[in-house]
Image (cartoon, rainbow, N blue to C red; front, side, top):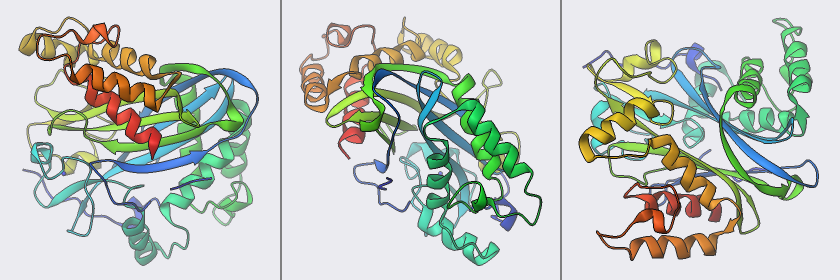
Length: 351
């Protein structure tokens, strides 16, 4: 079960509310989930960024797959909000926050579930917290094939305006529950793949956090599938504000969500913009390995290792010195902050 920052201001309305509270510790805000399926089988994590609920936010969707079965899923949404009662994403109060329009900050709805749920209750009389709604949707998808989840979407769509969502998805009350389930399907079918080790799905736990493993100009989403103290699979990605028209912004960057972004920049996933970001790395630092390949090298290095083994690798990387070769420790990686990315994986796995 779950354990669980220019343009006009963005106003939260009842229509923008999709119906986890936790305080960030060392720039990491945790959420965790437990799973269930079969015996030892290769585990793959798939990542996609989508817009399952309106145009004022974008969603990160991570799906753990074994064969054609969704072992688990993790959904979070990111939205600009007004007020000082929120906990912004990591680096919202640093350089990253310079990309925000005046008067707003960027939050993880899951990390700010308590405040977001209170707003939902005030505006739409919601009685189930945002985090609990997402947990119920994710639980519904666990152990099902894409075809079986599609059947659930059909049942939801057939309910009509007076139907009860929880009759199909136990515990969920969100009107857009079908959209979130479709996002899980889309991630399973089309998401960027991170290959992991073999594991018994019944022992897997999917954990996720927002973090700051690399400077103050971006924030990261880090996801691990763990079995005890072993990291079975992991995903990494970072989000940064950039200038220029060669980039593909996050979903809804050109819609309501984009109203929270300062003029002249857009918010991008570095993973999905690996080609453009890698060219920037080459121009600035002479990088020869694409960003996405670096992330794959780091996550594949982590897959199958215990957190203690990864901590040893972090120490070894930190002992290399300025003249050391990162690839001598993590084959295929050239990023100077490789130790920071590995430490983020360890921190999430240990939470």
